[in-house]
Image (cartoon, rainbow, N blue to C red):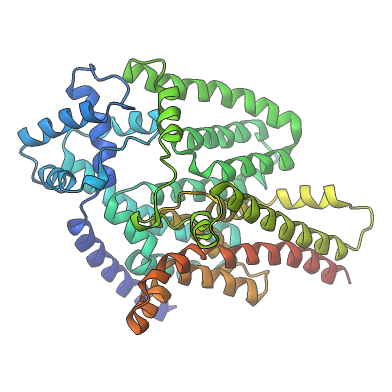
Length: 442
């Protein structure tokens, strides 16, 4: 115990020093765009309206504000931004996303440094909270969270550019903790808790829909846990909540077409097909380039492989089921009642199938990885697969190969494969859960 506490103190000091240095050095190009696009509407006396397809007008207002500002950090990032033509103003965030950022203070330095410091704290808390569902070693997870905040590549990338993936991870960990500790155990206030859970999922879908598969699977979890009647009632309440979230940005941007403009801007301009050299570590994109086939064909092939492997694991799980009264449907529903399994499937499939996967997106892979790594009721092999995923996505193997052989072109492929051990661990978990039940019965 004393050794563990001493280690935590040492890691905490290292994390504080490392975070301060990295926050000072970070430019925060992404945060700059989030904050500036949101604020430009106010600076223009609400004359700009929707930010989509108006990059030049928004950039003009933003640059004028930065030039006249005394904020040294704002001037610094604005100068860097102007020198990077490949990073033209690119308002791909949803209208709700920008509406929320509009609530940040007008002081850019205050907003930026608060945002960055909060990111570090919430990231560490997220890792520790994953103990809730997996019954792991809490002190060990504190140490792991501190260590990851120092060395884990996707987190450091998120910190460097000032994106929101650390916050996404925190919210989903909170939802999983709520599902595990409240929804799955409480027989009281079932409808109220279900409404809260579903409204949170609606909020996440409208904030940043890149994890829509995770949101859909967690909705299925809610249905499997509480049934159709509760889901329908909670769904009606969440629709009203969603309608409010849709309305607020329309009022702020004074445009009823702001949501359709966002949709047209993102999908119509191929905003999900950035090339590898700009940092897109998508397995679909990389595989498409290797074999010279279309993005859609590659996506279809990988999706088919995932489905086939998942089906095989379910069939094996059924064979381990001692009760012959349970068939395929009952087994699937039973598995859907595990929120961590649903989230793991959604996150891993998203990383495998998305045509756009920035490096910092791999922060979300920590949820299934740590879930596998710390679960006490699974095999060491599954825990090892979770650890392997964390190593692959950390850049450590890639940097080692670059230092030894100079093969820098392999780095995107190594990182992109970080989801493969997770899928293997998910399949193993599906089989192991049923095998464990059978062994207990026997």
